Image 1 (spheres, rainbow, N blue to C red):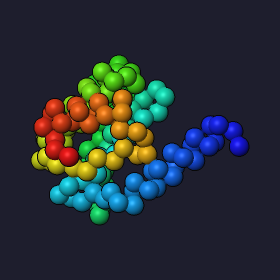
Image 2: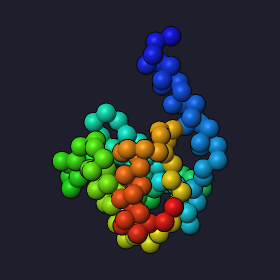
Image 3: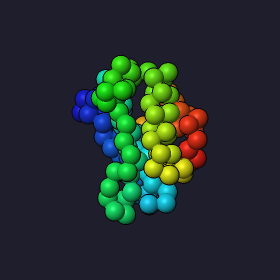
Length: 119
């Protein structure tokens, strides 16, 4: 088995294990972070209804110039935090999506906290 396939299997296993215990409701939705090699995506999801309440990504027009770095991830976290507060969502459950809580993922959470969201 190649190293890349083994790495992806470990990631999928961690993601499944985390998602067994993390669940978002309308009062306390789940903030899911996805990071690819080029872009970052954040969704705030109500798992009961199966709807995305708020989303932000580096593909949007106002966040288009952001790179996949720690400094820009904090800006993305602040942007999603502001959108959440506009929709009267002040608490959430953080879903790191199988990734380590370090670097880009951690700075997205820190940016959302800076905007006023509580985890």
